[in-house]
Image (tube, rainbow, N blue to C red):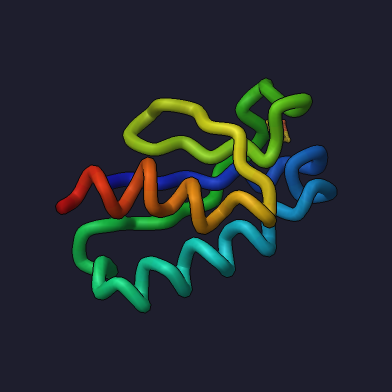
Length: 80
Ligand code: FES
């Protein structure tokens, strides 16, 4: 599964750094490192919806507080 987090300036200001860090820890804690790749990407053109995170090309809007829910519903549950 390919997960990309927008690190363009608008999403950066909304906390994309935190989103990346939290996603990386969640992936590691759940032993999914060999199944999930997390990368950064430049502006996805949906700045108002940031922080933009794509999961297999589908764009989601995530914020620092919703990372865990997002991880459970869009990543973990789809791999089990
Ligand atoms: S900066 Fe993230 S969508 Fe534009």
